[in-house]
Length: 570
Image 1 (tube, one colour):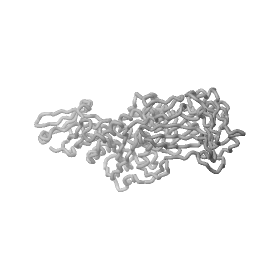
Image 2 (cartoon, one colour):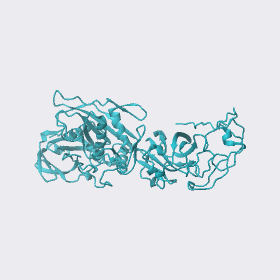
Image 3 (cartoon, one colour):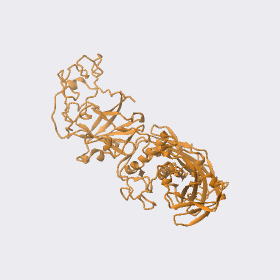
Image 4 (cartoon, helix red, strand yellow):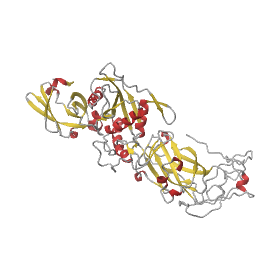
């Protein structure tokens, strides 16, 4: 996106007085100059050099019309805005969900010095924070962000009221002023410009006459020494692909139909209308370090079992196998319970970043009238599918993560919902979305936690089905409900023998002898529901299969009716 620079009328006499030379100030060196400094004579462009005396504002010494374009003209006296006085940029952040400082106290931070990586192809909000000199008068400042990428230059501009903030004296400006977007110069950067190799500079100008001749030591641009600095975008490939499954709870004639994912709900930050499915995807994208969330709307399915527990998870895992879903895809169902609501809004298996755990990337949530709550539950439950545990906050969360940096669930740092207009700024007192508290957002800790997770599963798309040395093979699946109900089926899926924890064992009776195999135990985020996965014996042994037993963590042995194992050949 290219922006034309603001053309602002400045009377020539106000700038020139009775002389052909323009009085101005310039600075040299990378010091802030905000606590004092020398004043230098110059031509008004802030570089400290003598002026050209032609009065056209372009510094070329040729006759012109005074409009700053360097062409001879009408003498109407229009000039480009002069550099700002009394104000200097000291901190710069780039926000893609969590705040990432790239400049602190005027010092550029290399990517390995930052709290998180910048993701290519993801929109960003760049905020430039400033200090002002003593006596600075509140006024409108015109700022230009220039991006240089692949030999091309792109400009983004903003008009912002700049003001002194006594409460921020001696404080880090990006900390003190961050809570309000009026405390910085703000630039939305579209995803196509957030690329490795992009460089930036920021310039500030007076937007109206009256302060252009004020003596100042402030530098009206960043970098202070001129030129550009790298934004520092990583060369990433970060995807999340979610299959949404509308479920019809088919237990009576009065039951509601499967949810309509195409129902209109809300708009994006450009004002485009969204469906509920699109809104859910946008909320997931906002809270995760990704450059794309793809929502795949599946055809509705019928479910005749209970929706007051996690038994639907087993059916979803089986459906996932039947669909031959790639290992990186998440499955998430939505349903309107017909025989009483559960004591939870959603439930999911606790997944892992391996192909071996593909079958556990399932979850479901209640389709409430409040679709914002539906989306909030969706983000939380997909978090479980990413391996995240609950975060302690209200005290009602079960199975909390003890490694979280505090016991209140606070996110501890500012965050920004970049897909809203205006952007939604979240204070450090908001809570991580894996808590049960209100006012939730993604914590910096949680953002960094899932980053390698998403990197890993995204890489499978590029490496093909044999990535990681794992191959599909016939497996036995069992979903064990908190009330003791069981669901067993077979499917071909990925298996990593080293992932089996040994807590569960499956014994196949073959020609009178027991063939025992270790099973993978996959917990859910609510109650005692869990799933076990084990490799099936070879085909010739299955033909001689006489029985099947399962030994749980408590060493309790249970007989599984082979005839009720869906897909098992005797």
